[in-house]
Image 1 (cartoon, rainbow, N blue to C red):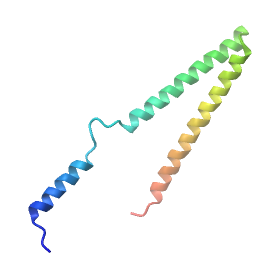
Image 2 (cartoon, helix red, strand yellow):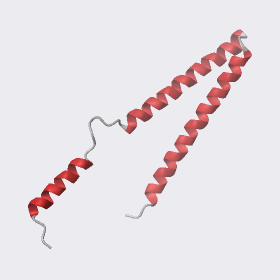
Image 3 (cartoon, helix red, strand yellow):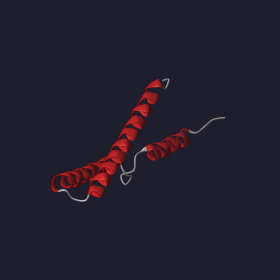
Length: 96
């Protein structure tokens, strides 16, 4: 069976265009950066609430809530980091 070269070229062009990243597709870096920015701003707000609670003797429930939120955010960040490292190591183990 012979395949005409024009058909092969057309198929190659379609495949190449399909493999190109879209300009409107969200970037992983941007999404990850936004998520980390959100975590950091939450940590800063919790730190301010904890400081205000300890210094000015404000509501002790606010201190406990701030500490619990901070612990959850740190655990989430560590979990994401562990998954990223695990994925990277799995890629390194792939045969070439």
